[in-house]
Image (cartoon, rainbow, N blue to C red):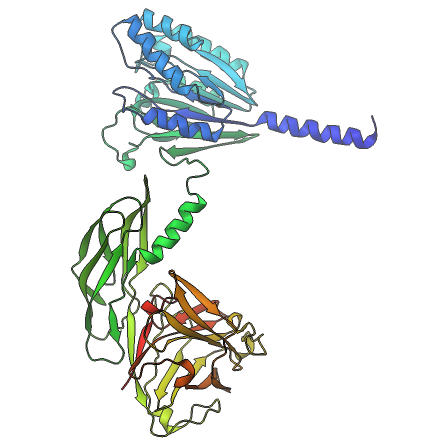
Length: 578
C-alpha cells in the first residue's frame, strides 16, 4: 500500500470511527392513559423526518385491559402499524398500562421481541431499560431486588462506556429527591456516572439534575394531560438527543414543529406576496397636508382573491398615544371572488404626526388548508395644495429665490411600512404657473463624499444612485402615468407607463421634457426642475396624481411621500393646483 493510499485509508478509518461514536435518538413520552386520538401518530410522522438512529419510549403505549387477550393483541397491532413508518429501530420500555399481569407481560415480550428489562449499546454509549410497570412508585431495590441486582451488575460491567442512559416508566426516584431517606437507585446513578435517566407516567415534562445526572420526566406523546399549559410541562412532545464523543445534548420538540421541506412552496410564497398587495387596500383614505383638521374618514376594501372564504376579524395595531381608530375592529366575511368595503375613521391626537401609520392584520386562507396573516400599514393618499407662482424661479440648482422661500415644502416622508422616515431630512417644494410645474428638492446628506453617482448620461442607471423618484398621473385616469428618476448631478432616467391587465407596462424609449439643474449646499444636494405641462399631456388643470421617493444609498434606505409606493396610480397621492 503506497504512502498516499495509506494516509487516505487512515483518514477514512478515523472518520468511520468518529461516526461510530455518535448516535442520535428520540425519546417518546406516554401515549396512554386516555389516548388523545391522532397525537401519537402525528408525532411519529414528525420523528420519521428526523431520521434518528433509533427511537425509544418510556412506557404506556396501550391502554390497560382486564386480561382480554384479543383486545391486547389488537392494541399492540395498532401500535406496531403506527411505528412501522419509522426508518430506524424502536426500543420498547414497559409501562404500567403495558404490563399489569402475567398475561400482559407475556404478550409484551412476544409482540415487541424484548424482555421486560434489558440493555444495549450504540456508539460509545450504553442504554439500560428497566421495568417498574407493576411496582410503580416502590423503590426498585425494594420491589424487585433481582432486577436491581442485575442493574448494578450491568452498570459495573459497562462503567467505562462513554455515556450511560437509563429508561423506565414511573419516576419513583422523585420521592427520595431532597428527602433524608436512602436512595440506592440514585446513589448507583451517581457512582456509575449515569448521564441521564428518562421516565414518564406523569404526562408532564420535567427536568432535574442531581449529582451530575439528568433526570428527565417525559410528558405526553399522546396521553391526556390536565391541560395544555406549556408552563406546567403540559404539551405534546418528544425529545431529540445527540451523543458525540463526550457531548450529550437534548432538545424537546413540541408537536407540530417538525415540517416537511415543502411546508412553504414557491407557489405559496408568491401567492402570499401577491395577496399582501391585493387583498386589502385603502384607495379612499386621504390625508391633506398642512390642514388644521386632525381626522379623516375613509374606507378600506377587501378583495378575496383566494379559493376559500375569509371569516376573520381585521385587527388594527396602532400607538394609542398618537392615533384613534373607530370602529376598533371589523369582521370580514367574504366568499371567494367577493369584495367588501368597510368605513372607518382615523384621528390624530394633538401635537402628533400621522407617521408612523397604524397597521392591520387579517387572517387570509390563501389556499385550501393554509392560512397566512396579512400584515401591513394602512395606505393613505396624501393631498398637497401647491402654490401658483407669479414670478417663476430660475432653474440653476439653487433654492434662493423668494418664490421658494414663500412655499411650504413637503418635509414628512415615511418608510415603506408606514414608519417614520429612515432617511435624512428632505424638503420638497412644489409650485406651478400657467405652463409649467416647478419642483425643488433639498436632500440633507451628512456625508456628501459618500454619495453614489454612477449614471452620467440620460437614461443611465440613475435608479441605482442616490436619487429622487417621481410619479406623475397628469390626467388622473389612474392608468397612464410618467416616471422620472434624477440623481444628485441632475442625470435623468425616465419612461412613460401604463397599467395593462393589472400589470405595469413601461416605455423606456420615451423621453420627457424635463429641465433639470443640480447643486450643492453644505450638508445637502439640490435639484431644481421645470416641467412643461403639455409635455405630460393630456393633463388635468386642477390636480395630478403624484408620488415621490428619496433613496439614500449610504444608509440603504428610502423615504416615500404617499403609501403604498409603487407602480399603482390608483394609490398615488394628489397635488392640487390652488
